[in-house]
Length: 136
Image (cartoon, rainbow, N blue to C red; front, side, top):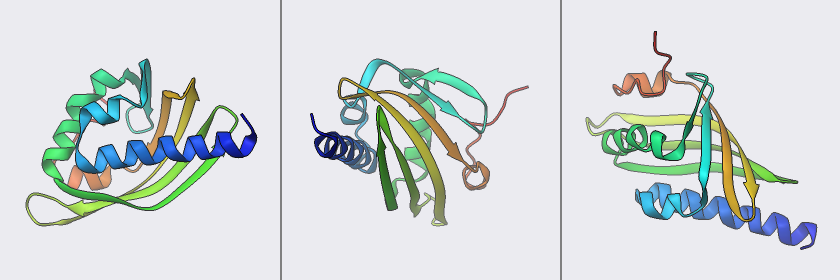
């Protein structure tokens, strides 16, 4: 595969994940991940499996049912891509929601195997989500 083809494949994988997340389709989102994929959050410094991350993601989806990704920037690199974006929407109580984030996506054999995710937890705390905060 040429570098151009690899970059196109990374962009397509990123779009598949964003589309599934916007629709709230856990099955479609999980389809882009390797079964052993993990995610690390800067906010709690934990690395968990995607399955272990699903309850927190479901809580978020319930609190912000109307959501979309904006200002998406995809930067492919050898072995993955960096995704910068703003996750915006409206919470169930009608408040606007905006979360800028950056994720380093590690890809092997066309599947995401690891995400290193960076975001400020303050917008989540404002809507009552503490799932990704450190535990004592």
